[in-house]
Length: 122
View 1 (cartoon, rainbow, N blue to C red):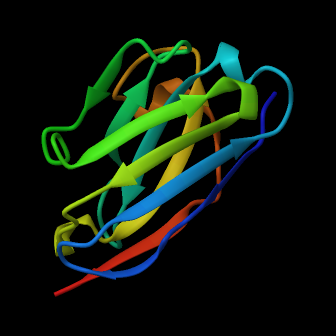
View 2: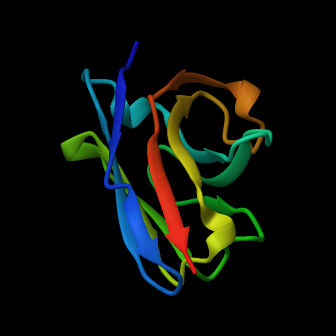
């Protein structure tokens, strides 16, 4: 089992940047695929990006490709989401998830953090 805690959210103007962190408890972080998802009020949970256990494969949602970058440091039990060129439509709660499958489907991830709010103003 793993517990996840996100941080780094906040209020930023359009065009700005934020860096989110996802810190995992336990010694098994490296055995999990990590995904970032987001959920805006009244909308379904949306896949943002996923990264494999060793970081060698990454998949991005088309909406963030070229603007967001995921990385992970298994020695620090931490995953990061660098978000550049933020748009108002990126406003959402961002959640980190861990699972066994390298997938876009949030239902395939077993463990979730509480989320961190990202608000992009125009």
